[in-house]
Amino acid sequence: MSESLDPAFIARRLVELRTEHRDLDVAIASLAGNLEADEIQLKRLKKRKLRIKDMITYYSDKLIPDEPA
Image (tube, rainbow, N blue to C red; front, side):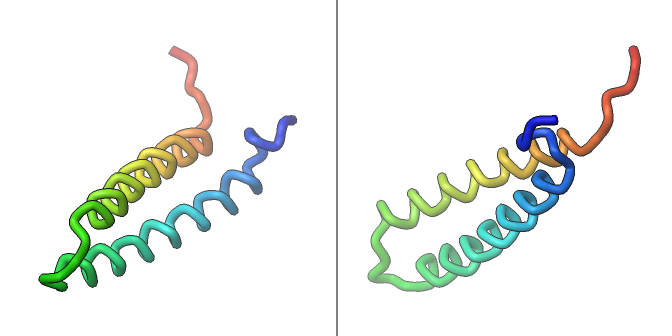
């Protein structure tokens, strides 16, 4: 079984991604509340957060076993 399909690896990766997603929430909220915030940096953080959300969805789907059609 490859590492990318190992349920333990996926579970660890999901914890890492969810933690980073929450951290980005805090950073985005902090920057959004600052009138002098760098808009480009804010947009980059939001894009990163969306990519992480997609990765969370991808790995979560990997943990769900395929059902026969």
